[in-house]
Image 1: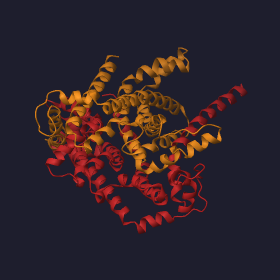
Image 2: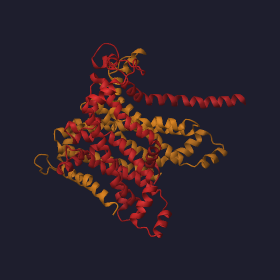
Image 3: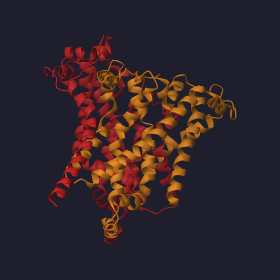
Image 4: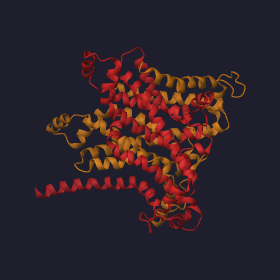
Length: 288
Length: 269
């Protein structure tokens, strides 16, 4: 009996092993990127020489830097005005997209979830199909509109199409559908109009959905690459995501520091909003 | 009334211009003369298009089954854990939050021919592999896709799993069903609706590996990882709007058909 129990415990312990191993592999690139920030340029050069300068031998790496330092980071923050321009570009683009998605997406989602009108089903299907279309399909259409409105090569070219993307609408729609009709009915009996019901009941009760879609939206827009690459020509308008690959391994210190600065806002948001993020992801999977 | 502003934006930024692209796909780029199906013929005859389309299809064909099964296994295992469940869930989800551009340097050092991975191979007594310069580039793409999406799909599966009532399992166990039988007879059938959504979402995300491919290998990567997005970008630079239009229409139809077919086949279950 005793041994049986112990064997069971042992088996349970064993299942953790591959999981922890896998978790380690998954974390590795992130730890790698983070450890590079604390290395000095000479250490990076010594480690990476075979990769960047064609030197003999193989690249090496140690997760714990020899002489940890914040020099690259300080250099980046104090001496690279270029970096700041890109950083603010990224931030501006992401925040504007978020604001726009909230402004237009929340009412749309509410209407789709809560009103019965002709064409509702068709519009919903259209939104789902559009949300699943890859950028490569939408690239030329969006380019043509932006060209007609003379918006190419401005931040609006990246922001506007993203504001009207249908993915956030779909996520919030799922959350709004979950609000029990009885509550809305009660409010209507008390004399609340459509707008009041939406503002005082819909938004507060659906706030989890709005936050989830906001987090997903931020992670996506912070990571945009194809859109700015196609619609922005002027380098001073570029977001960080396009600037980073321009930094060669010769300036690895700077590169790692910039990558770190890009990683930090996304990770902080991830850690603080993990619950919402999970809910937002799960919202897409539940049955209709 | 609530829907109008948002819907107007969608129409203006997506629907109308897409209709315009459909029209242009039948015209010549320079003179706007009606050319019928000629653009489509050119596109299908184009070897770069065939290669890119094949790569994109092959990529989804290889990745999605792996991702779907791997994430399901992970979700089932994690669901059963007593402690550390939330911690592991977060860890697996991290890659989703990591911007592709932040880890470019990491991929570059890992997969360079003198890079870390080859260093490890040599230490183990193996041979160098040209990760970025041979057919292995394709598997690099697969790995980075799996890395990025494993946690996301796992959460999707867990949402499906939590919808299955514990009572059914209890009843089955009373009837003497083992773990495996519970899995194949209860878990799998109940998860079929989730399978549809998960496949579709994984499919959608599979187009985003272009980011990793472009960041690591630039505009003209090894041909095994030359995707449709690369091709469209290169055509775009040449202002070959007629070709892109036709290709985008074909592309849209394929995506649409896949979505509808998947939907149909799972609704029938």
